[in-house]
Image (cartoon, rainbow, N blue to C red; front, side):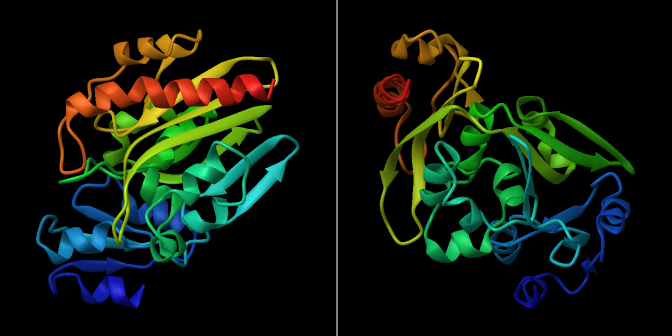
Length: 263
């Protein structure tokens, strides 16, 4: 956390809550607040003056880290390092293992990844797709009130809420397929996650095909090409919209095949 505070402007008020309740109170309505978990996204944005917050909310001491299980339901705290998800079953484990590199996975947090805004040159928020495929719900706060809602309802408004934890039911089967552009700090150009629930319900989701992770309900019946009905791919430094349009059905098909094999 010390490294994160050094990069902040001298006029920025630094808040270090010691509990979840203190974090919720300090966040308030989120106006002018930069939430710092691992700092892998926020600190570079502040350093290069892309973001100049009035307050920096450092969550390292707020008690929001850890993974707990209650029967078939798993809850992951917002400041849990991405690296702690790597050993989990698909789609979450392979998706987490595909995030950036060892250094970033060790420092970056689950909450920071889920709440990542659209990147300036490349997609962010790899974990959004995996958690969407799992039908995850999130606990978040704003204006002192805590709510729990499906992740797909949270994502469009994630910039104005403080994420506390994310929960999901263990799937009967899962699968993950990604398109990479390898370099030092590896970004995922496009990825697809899939999960089959115990009742047979299939959920698919993609990251890198829009401003945030998106469900692919049109393809959940088995038609991989239909996934293009649910997204609007765009150009960035990693891939063109045209290329993503060609590759997305391929990744969807791989995920569907893997889920079929595990049935």
